[in-house]
Length: 290
Image 1 (spheres, helix red, strand yellow):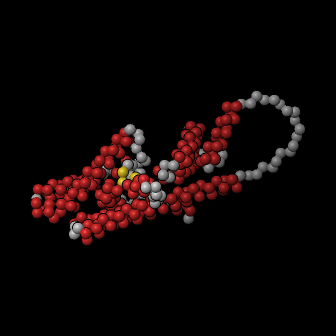
Image 2 (tube, helix red, strand yellow):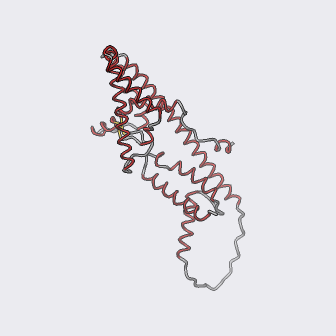
Image 3 (cartoon, one colour):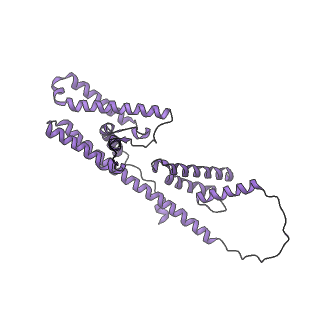
């Protein structure tokens, strides 16, 4: 049963639905956040096509007075969203080039969080902010436009955007749960295999004590340091002697997913743990490679 569970592929977002929800949600997200990660903006073909649709719709509405009077608010919102998207992307590309960018999947810094910190208040968690607060804020703006300004088209679009924002975060949340479960199950399997190997080792009878004359030997410091490094790296990768490069690689992939900075909000601890794992696998690759 454990083998079947651990051999399942790591769950990924729904191939078509997730990019579509992400693209629609970005029309509001670019108004609500700043400083995105490079991969989060993902300028795939769907974004290029979406940008052209908004630009062409704005041009058509601008040149047709009857259409402009009816759709000018929605057209202006769409054109502003496109302009902000490419502005954010340009800044992110420049920071990526200067090697000062945020992690690739960083979803941006919310203006709500920045405002609360400026007022000396504690901002909510990122999960609560993205899953509930931002979609509700978009809904509130939609209701205000509908009933206070009698704006039908933009308010209807914002309702659709709010639903897509909620759906996008729901899919991401479920995907993260499945991914974390897969990593935990992989680690548990590695621990069980390590315990089994440890239990299967034959216990040798202790040798009889004999008195011998002490022999003074010159201590090989380099050899002792190398053995200490090997033992420490083996503990990091949770492998037992005799060491196998295949087992070391398998445990490394599972552990680095758990400790990777992108999965731990780029914390200093996760960066240090990932660096140690990289050093450990590099040591055994050099030692055990044929």
